[in-house]
Amino acid sequence: MRTPRLTLLFSGVSEMTEKILLYEELSMNAHPALQTQFYDGWVLRFANGYTKRANSINPLYSSGVDLKTKIIECEKRYAMYNLPAVYKLTVAADPNLDRLLAEQGYDITEDSAYVMGMDLQSKNFSAGDCELTRQIGDAWLNSYFELSECTDKAKMATARLIFENTKNALIFGRVFKSGIPVACGAVVIERGFAGFLNIVVDKKHRGKGYGTEICESLLSVSKDLGAHTAYLQVIQNNNVAVNLYSKIGYKTIYPYWYRVKNFCSR
Image (cartoon, rainbow, N blue to C red):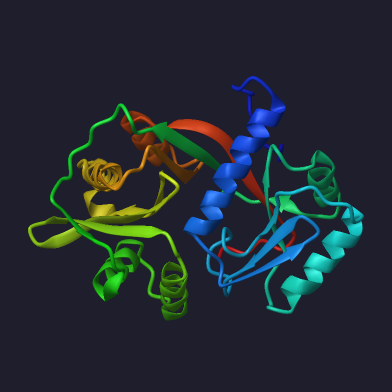
């Protein structure tokens, strides 16, 4: 499978690299790992295997150690947690690393994604029939896993720990119809940037506008709290979600992809 590439929309590579670094740092803070290690410019994240984002190697900064040596060391570190070594790569990463990983049997997974963003300053959104809270609570977490059709108690426990480990402002939302939650999501705000988390709509009620309703409700309260920019991450082949976010006003900033030797669906 070919590595995704991005047509540069900015004036120079350095500007793009700075933008990617900003959004990658915001994303890591929005979805924090339970443990983070730093290794010669790479950020290694661990969270009991719950989501690749929180259990991946992020080569964000310049480094000097030989790449083959680093790959072997990272495999050892993740093996200690009984986890595969997963690399989260962007177009700002060293292309030699991407090539070397491919040569060593690290395949690109099917969940390559886009980071999308939107300037909120000229936008106006209205909150719908949405319950908004500042605390995660059992009700929101139960709704999220029910709508996601997940019953794994270990994942639920880890998700709670991740949210509790988030130190920036968090808002949790649920859209109700006839007293039943049909959509939920969360947004985290840092430095005026509002990042979506865990947007999900009941499979039985998709196509009825509830996805737009939860998103616009969270964006409305984000603006009230001073957010000037919104961003999110979405799987590239999730055409329904990509179209939804595009209609709201999001535009693609850059792609990222994962490489892993032994594919893990977690």
